Image 1 (cartoon, rainbow, N blue to C red):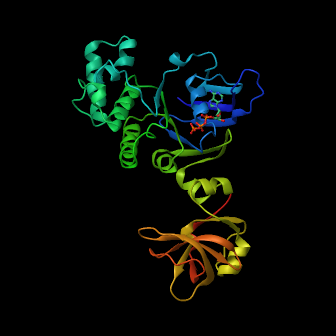
Image 2: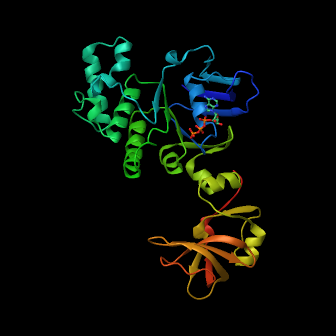
Image 3: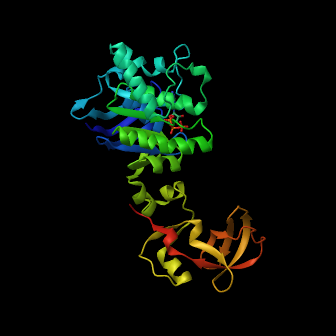
Length: 331
Ligand SMILES: Nc1ncnc2c1ncn2[C@@H]1O[C@H](COP(=O)(O)OP(=O)(O)OP(=O)(O)O)[C@@H](O)[C@H]1O
């Protein structure tokens, strides 16, 4: 029960000259695993998902489910569930009718459909909603119904494309937790596309960082955070500058393993009293800490954390270095 993607290439346009939207991707998703594809807009993550769903034909490579090559299996025979950003519910069916739709098409008996609908409504936290008109649902409730609809036929793989992107931040954060619980408790195998690193890292067993049609790093969230593969990945997951270990050790006196190190803003903190001398270039106030751009004679421009009311540009400050907020580059 494993999805295998091997050297997959997807190209738009019929003449074959357009750059590949997916450019040689290898990926497996094991039984019960949740893999998130994370990357900036246009990196090819939706295209990859659509190719797995059977909605875009590959220009090269293979997609297999266990030993079965899916090249000749049409989308509706793959047994995969889909959930998109705007879960578009059927407006003329009530909530129960939406969730039961796939089961009806599969010829499941009415009474069994009703039981399954109730079970799913409990699962997504909407008990008793079966008779509600979909036009009366809030955005978050509609996405819960869309999730229940995708899960109803027990898909062997669930494909989710930015399912929470249309929701406001507070609701999104609440639903991330709920979605994680639903995927885990049902043992659902899932491929989840998002540009939001918080979402990807909260939900997934493994995260694939995608850029320009390729996966630059694939690993467990903790591994990507502690060992970003390169400066691009480090930047995407919230690190700032990259500096050589020798330069950092010379400036701070802290020994580090050789190689390049990515620094989070928290690696340098403005302190009262002794520390590394730096000059404030500009600053962004924040409720707890400010973000301060500083210049050090030995290390150049870096981000640091400052007090809530930030020091003015030109102020001479002292910094403390905390190596626990640094990560060596290289997976
Ligand atoms: N139907 C299409 N025809 C031509 N080019 C397309 C089509 N769909 C996507 N592309 C192009 O393929 C590339 C990858 O697009 P894709 O939608 O897969 O990216 P994405 O990472 O999902 O982006 P987003 O987060 O903005 O949805 C982009 O350069 C995009 O412009």
